[in-house]
Length: 161
Image 1 (cartoon, rainbow, N blue to C red):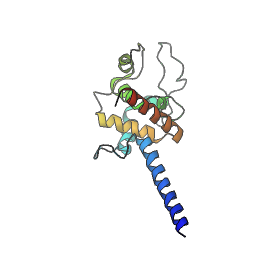
Image 2: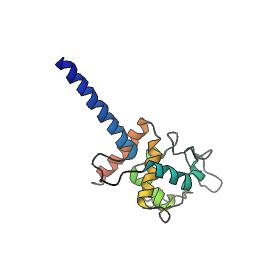
Image 3: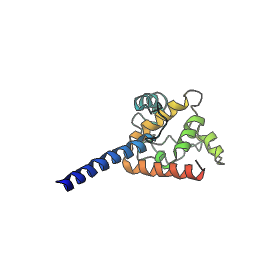
Image 4: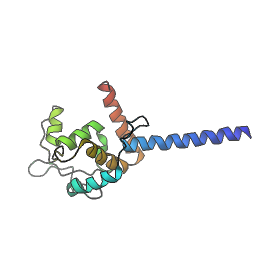
């Protein structure tokens, strides 16, 4: 009987740990995140619809032919769901791209590129931007969440944070 209790207890711990891990990846938060500053996915959804959906689609589907530059050399808005490339970027890249706009964010990385992505830093607060990004990430499957989280962790370690 004792063996079954230990096994059952272990399964409960693994289940809770796995659920917490998926939540942390989906929201970008850890259990040690700053108290009182949780992400608001409902606000993120609302703000996404207000500020992002016109270009990126109400269902995060992006614009048609988003992989091909238009006549002016500007790429259409990519999807933010798992079919796009948003999850290929670290949290800081996504934040900067949203706050500063594509051209300015890429210039910070030493890349000269014309982007159609405007900056929203004058319209949205930092927490609002984080809520939008948390909402977007909350729609991704586990694989994309894990890849994106690993990329963000690697960047933080490289920067010594």
